Image (tube, rainbow, N blue to C red; front, side):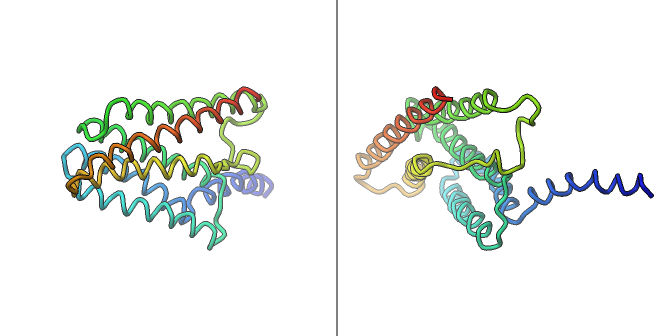
Length: 207
């Protein structure tokens, strides 16, 4: 009987990790991640109106997974990784696909996409420098929970506004809106990106 009892005990941590992953909010987030390449495909094929619809559904799901996590008390450490990962993948896909069809200027593609690469690389470097040698690189306990800053939330909102505005303009162009679109493209992105990168690497420098 003892080996069986030991087996059950050993399986319990694995089951706990699966429960952390397969919650309803996390499944919604993972669905958004899976749908992201399809959004890029629609944009590259010139199906801008369908792409706007997919982006709208993705935006609603982004709100819904957070709401359900709070409402159902299903906040998980894994979820704190998945949600910003889904946002980064969506922003990166929008940025590259809009740049590919020349709806987004190349310098802005470099700024937005390069910024996210720097942040991801900086985060991984920070984790590498601060973790214990005996601990896993990616953990599912509360000690390694991702907490987005207010600056990060504002920046993500500005990015989606910028990229969504460019996509909406392509789907349903409004006469005389080109100047407003240029302001929407450059001003918020430049401010948010410069502030976020500065703050992020100031923190890394102090680590």
